[in-house]
Length: 180
Image 1 (cartoon, helix red, strand yellow):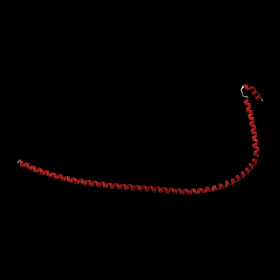
Image 2: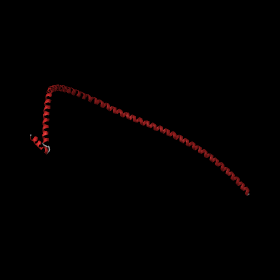
Image 3: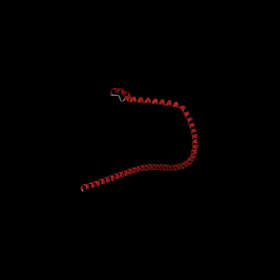
Image 4: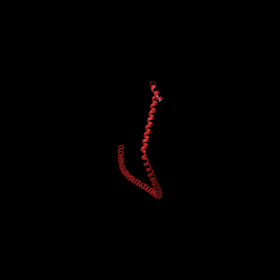
């Protein structure tokens, strides 16, 4: 019985082993199927994430364009306000300049009258200057003669003062000149 029992046990063990082997292969096949599904799901996830990122990029670009357009609209509104103010200021300046122009015209008439009077005075002074110019050569000659006489007197004075300061060996000559 031992042999038979061992044979029976062996048969059961072989059957159990076969059954376990079949179960292991079935589990391995199921595992491979799950890995395949997991890989497919992962690639789908990546594809959807890429699509999401692309859509987010488009959203950011659209938001940037909206912000740019809003800024441009605000700039145009500011510019319109500024131009309206400049137009009003320009109209005011035109009116002020018209008033100033009228004042300048009256000043121009006044100064033209002053110019005419000055021209008459200039003619009178030029006539007087021309008559005085005839006497100028005689006055210049008199001044030149007087200047030469003055220079001659200063030279003589200088010579006398230099001679008085000579050393003692020329004392006799110096005293004679200084006493004169």
